[in-house]
Image: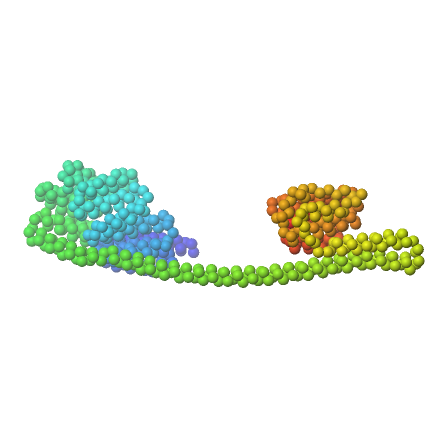
Length: 535
């Protein structure tokens, strides 16, 4: 399977090379339709597969072929199509090379169409994508050719000199010879003796490299050089060499140009008149067509821009609708969260009320009711000691008062620190020392009334449990700030206990959860009791 894929890929590469060479140098006219047909079919396959870059490569081959056969406006349209395909492609080395080549192709098209402004425009666009001397030297040379077309040999000489100097940084001897030949020709037009020397040096390099297309250019330049100096014999010699080489190369454009040069040098009056008339007709056609040169590119680009704007507007509209839907969804979600939270808070409140009622009921039953029953039993048994009866009644009264105080509505005083300190000090006994730390350092004004009530009730319940169960001789309650949180630590040296089912501490946990705080209990037998409250 892998071997089959590899063979197919190699065949594809071979076909591209063969048909690409056919378009660049069509030695047989019959091969041209097959070459164009191959690249057109490959283009359709690439587009159907979504392979944009390969499609652009095929369009470049078609453009080059269209330039070679003189289908310049078709070439302009093909190059424009390739550029439009590249517009939304991420910029990488391949895309840069493709853009550079397509802009160069458009420059060549407009040069042939005698539209120097557009030719310079696209050559300069291509230069923007050049990364080194190898890239830029050809474009600089191409711009020099436009100056030659205009008869501006001073600027042409500058361009060719630059391209030749750039070529010295490469090992591309074919290009070096071409630039040196162009430089020599422009210098000869300026009457500089070095011009002929440079053209002959380029001719020698081309002979050594068997560069037939280059030799044709050298022969043509030398024929024009000698003809311009009135040296008929030498001009005719090189013009005939160019003509014979054009036939050998089988390049129609070379044959046409070399024949025109040869007839001009032979000074046949009828031939010269024909050439002049033919040039005049061709020039008129170009001028008529040139009115529309560039319109295809601009119109297609404008159409693409309009389409992109329409798509952008549609995208913005969908985006706006999406935000609207998201806003509505968010609003409904917040309402749902509000009602769920409200229901949860109501459930927590009911649970707290139930727990409180249960705890009060249990205390009434276990402590007050049992003591009352015990006192009634004493009276029924006829216990006559009034002092003992009064002590029992006083004990029952104190328990009832404590129960009422623990569950009565709390009025938060302005100086909450002092109120809290009074609460803690009220649990002092002869056998128990209670110490507070940093209670006055807390900025109680920044703490909400709801949280203050929770703190008060938690400490009240902890201190009540201490008084009843701990047998502690030392109690320490410290206050500290931990970021934005208030931390309260309770420590005693009492008998401690085993935490089993929290020993009735669930009520404190419910209180602290209601204000999004936390409470941690640490105790074990004979190890004292510790509580950490964060709120």
